[in-house]
Length: 126
Image (tube, rainbow, N blue to C red; front, top):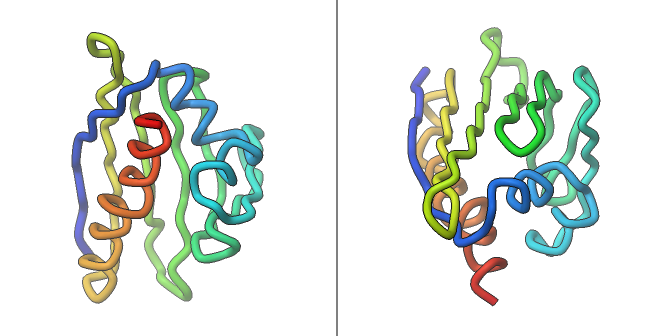
């Protein structure tokens, strides 16, 4: 199991990014795929038309979200924490993803960089 911690600079306010990460309509706008999302702790979510699934744990509007991501029959919980730090005209997004299975680590890291935060950054550049 491996952990990943990275920072991403997004040219949008923390409030806008929080909505983009938690509102299913907005998620579909920047991912191009259907999404199931609720800010109700304990609710299940699905991103990229089911490619990413899990359970929502905690929400602090405009600041933080915590999710458990599912990886098959993995015994340990893989926890994703996203913390939004306002910085100048944009936001520094802190990502902490724990307990990533070794065999999935490179794909997950690439996904965060390119598909997830790469797509979100492009969405706000337009």
